[in-house]
Amino acid sequence: MKEITQIEKNDSTEEKIKQAAREVFTQKGYAATRTRDIAEASGYNLALINYYFRSKEKLFDIVMLEHLQTFVHSILGIVDDPATTLQTKIKILVTHYIDMLIKNPDLPLFILSEIKQDPSMLISKVGVGKMQHKELYIVKQWNEMVAITKKPSINPAHMIMNVVGLTIFPFIGSPLIRNRTGMSVAQFNVLMEERKTLIPIWINAIINAE
Amino acid sequence: MKEITQIEKNDSTEEKIKQAAREVFTQKGYAATRTRDIAEASGYNLALINYYFRSKEKLFDIVMLEHLQTFVHSILGIVDDPATTLQTKIKILVTHYIDMLIKNPDLPLFILSEIKQDPSMLISKVGVGKMQHKELYIVKQWNEMVAITKKPSINPAHMIMNVVGLTIFPFIGSPLIRNRTGMSVAQFNVLMEERKTLIPIWINAIINAE
DNA sequence: GTCTATAGACTGATAGAC
DNA sequence: GTCTATCAGTCTATAGAC
Image (cartoon, rainbow over all chains, first blue to last red; front, side):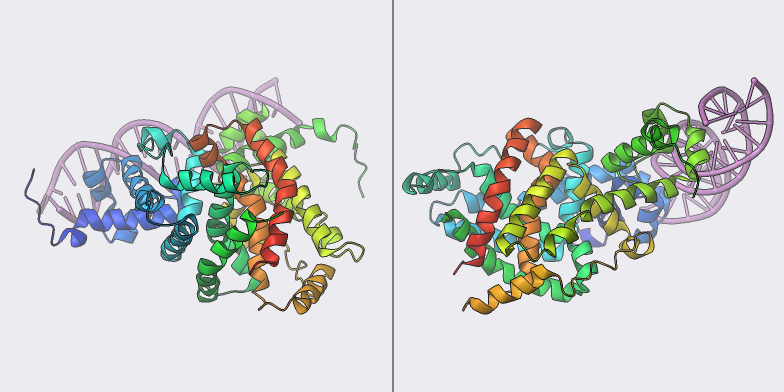
């Protein structure tokens, strides 16, 4: 329990370097990032990176952990809420993630690339064991819904891939999409705002499809 | 017009190195790949890479060009075919791509990552100017369909993102999906086979949605 | 805490033997 | 064509001055 001055936390050298690292790592990935890039982006010298974070890898771990937390943040509160319907949960989730992705469009490609490079990272560097969807309320609601529907039930993994794919894929493909269509980032974001209301409608249509 | 022995082309040293480069580059990306990795994977020495391909970057360009051609291959023949309906085109495209992605699951993440690193590559290293969808038959069919439907027409970019996202995203997220669900590659591929018939149905439902 | 200078390891590329 | 040996440049990390 040290006495820490919280007020100027965001102005501290350590925080500035971490912020610079976040930007460079997220944009270029671990392998393509040089510690010199981070130093330059932070406005400080190369040696300070090791002074504050010991190594490139340890700094990366911190950045990645914070990013994963951003991704999982407040999810539990949404999907385990008994007060909202299934459709409402989906709408809230899609809106929440599109808002977050408009602010951090590079996040999905960065995270998925690094996870692919080293999937064990999920358990070694980050403790992602909690999110085992044992008895989340959303699962209960899903099971109730498929019980009512007469249609042959498809694997729930399909629906998860659908919701996540419809929401996140445009951001992953954004560099290619914008290059081919000539869209600006602003124009692209307008489409993403539209998808906040469109995706829940589409998911509903998919659920009730032939 | 040189005389080339086509028969043993696949057994040549040059081809073996290119094949090794394809595997390593696709799996690790340009920055994380070392020429020594390629040499080792090819079974030959490091010096031969420069003997046959002059540099790491030129070898990468060849691999990337072939990958992009794989992705665009035979697309024109499908989307510009006046003999098939819009629904049929979508079904053929989805089936074609899922088949290809089951064989090359790393391709989307690799291509999109490298394009993001350097979007100008699409025009400088590859001549991707032809695919301007000026008057493809599929566009004509799409316009006819939205003309018939009374509903307010959404941006066609949404539908492209939907088809591509539903098809490709599971492969991009595969490392994470399989890690969280404990699925094997074989189990994952069973789901992808299911999506060959499911995605066209879902797209239809989306088109006719509220 | 912050800097310069540099060590030590690694990378892409090449020279030269065979 | 294929190899070993090595160069020149760059990288991460650290030593040491201030």
